Image 1 (tube, rainbow, N blue to C red):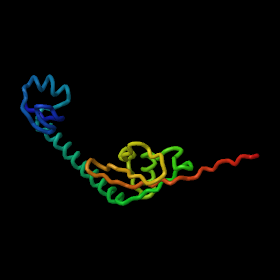
Image 2: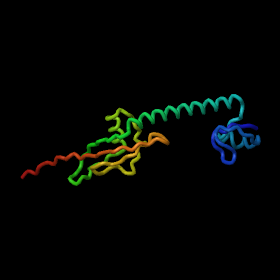
Image 3: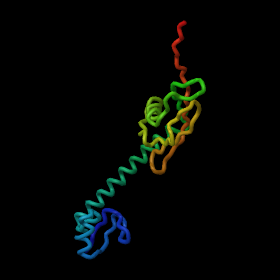
Image 4: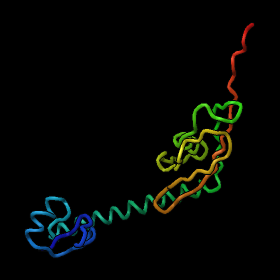
Length: 157
């Protein structure tokens, strides 16, 4: 029986391939697990259409990522945060803060999950931050954290 593989199957083939398998293997394993469809002309056309749609979607995402990357080149973002006297922040600067800062400065929406921070930024100064826009497109920006003095109430004597 000929089947179209919907997913990669070890020792059988990659997604999208048409392969010949035993009838029982197809009916009892590949079809119930959702690994394959029978290779009818309609199923082959449907699968090819889905692959073409996925390819177009990927191209569109890469184009958007390249456009965002060109706008992020050389960006130096300044973030204000409350800090103590020694430059330690009272809170931290997170990926969400950086994404909202980029949105405010450039008008570009960056998903906070694409901003790679090992740990939140907890000190004043310049920090290099990597933004992974797609699997192959990354940009590095400088995030300058500036401290705001916190007003302390004066003791009354």
